[in-house]
Image (tube, rainbow, N blue to C red; front, side, top):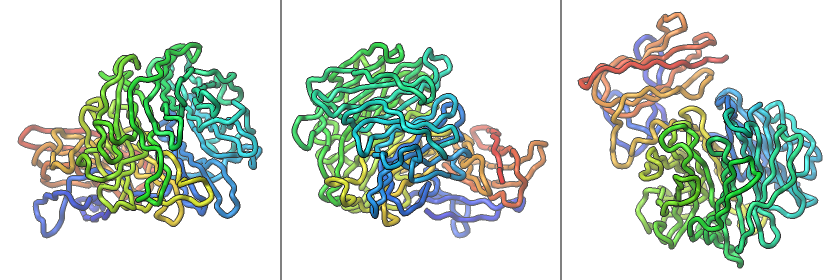
Length: 552
């Protein structure tokens, strides 16, 4: 991605961001260009290191969107040491801190496969597998992941990777309870759960949720409205490569005391196995789940994404498929194909992560090779604002990489999942990418207000809007997204809290489209500023003001 720097009125410096391959419009094409865009932040590693980072996750504080917690499997290939990366930001991604090692004793006992969440009090929780002795273990941190408690045992025996969520709804009877869900590696491979009501200082005894007739794999958990706990898993065939055959679902409305279990809610045909064209990496089609808690018209809708092929609506190559329930999991829709490239075009989409944002938008992150060679991959986000009926998808990675198996870690291993959350109008995807020489955790903060624009079809915005700046707080630069419904005169200005004009970023006629403007505030004092968009167009006038914080 490249950025054109323009000197605008009032002496302020602003940047207009471009993406290659989309239509540009301008009043004077020879001097400057503005391009309809998907507002994608710069791709970067959140914690660059010489340690391999795979299997990425990210979560948000339930009441403070500026606090994010990310994790990954971390492997020192020179020593064979395995742990869990702990990376955090308390300023909306402006800066990140952390470590490639969860320092909760005993350090040598750590076995990776982290599950993470943040509870109502801001306590970071991390669960993981054991290295020397099988089992599931937990740690908690009260200082944003800098220091971790001694391990607590949740379950013994051999377990699959566990997932973790916390009830952040103050209206729930189980507000603050955090739930762990996993599959036990022993016949009949059932799903188990446990919970903590005290920030991880103690856990309930593990309880079996289901009694499957077919081997389970990949338990996932997500909170719904009013404290409802939702769990899904794959039932796989009983011989290698354990292809995902159908999806099971369970829910509890009383904190896990009882469960409504449905062993088969929809059929699937997963992709478990390897991708020979991509370095023989190991892949899976395991389900990922999230629930709408926006309070909008689709509040409580449950969404599950899988990777499938050779079962409609998936084609002969791997496709991302969404199934949804509008009645708490009692009934499920037919599959909906999420990726919008041509069917059966030989392109691979895989490793989806799903996140329903605060506005009810459904966002799916996945690897995709439609814009590169078969031995490589980029990263896409697809977004739906109508409950999954229709999708727009966009590449958010500004480069591609060539997946390769990591030697000594099992057949084809490069990690098994990626993750995503949101903070306000900004999506925070995280994925593993070896373009730096080893696998590292990458991100690209993305403005969801522009993901609704169908870039490839040339569709234009139909409304005026002013996006929340990102990052926020910031130092010294921040980005502001605009949506202009039709041609008109546009003014974007910065004010201090006394109403004095501090900078003019835009003051000119502009065509219909989505834009991003960058404000470099290196010459300004720390504090809260207001930014105001004024538009005069044939269709009418529009004014909107938002706040942002410069923190030096």
